[in-house]
Image (cartoon, rainbow, N blue to C red; front, side):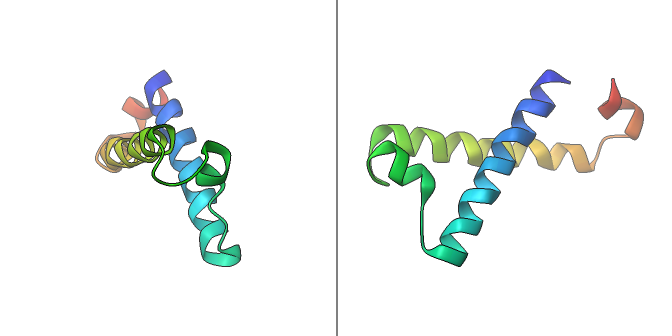
Length: 68
């Protein structure tokens, strides 16, 4: 359950970042970390991507499994 919530938070951060890129052409992660190519930015982008993959599993779980 903790891992699900953590992954959802990362996915939300990623979604908000992509929203700001789409609407304002502003990449908040890159701005905070010194550019898209920095190691820290790439780590964050990778974690957000992995969180997205993790959240796919939420689609296939029963409601009881998710709320535990």
